[in-house]
Length: 161
Image 1: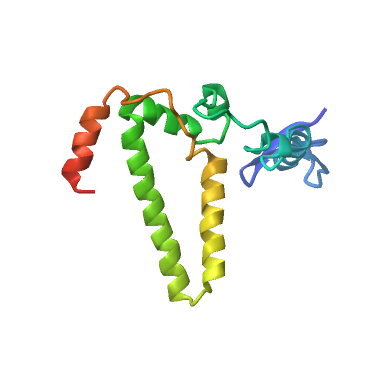
Image 2: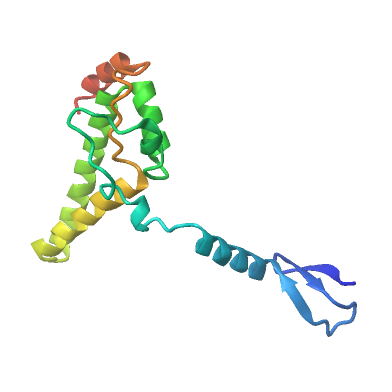
């Protein structure tokens, strides 16, 4: 029968009560083994079955199903919630402004450190791919103006952006 001892922020299960106890188990090892087991069981984000564009193409004018959009990335739910609340036009403009600002930061970085244009283009392409994989670029198509779309667009125009 072992006992639990706390040291360094971790709880350890020991097999004795003396000072020279042998360590049998700690939380860090348990987390590592659990993480390894889960990562072997679950498909990775870059798995072919999870990549967009690998499946069948949508017909012209056909919307991507909402359930499929929700599984696009970890932030897809927030973008879809934004569509429902503020409307697709407002979220599209805010997202476009964010993309423009981020692209400008990438351009300034490349200019400051004399990074060639080809590499700059790869940085921008990587940002686009990451934005898609994280769910920032879900197409929507179901919410129109949303609940507060008119008020959101009035505010947007009043800010001068």
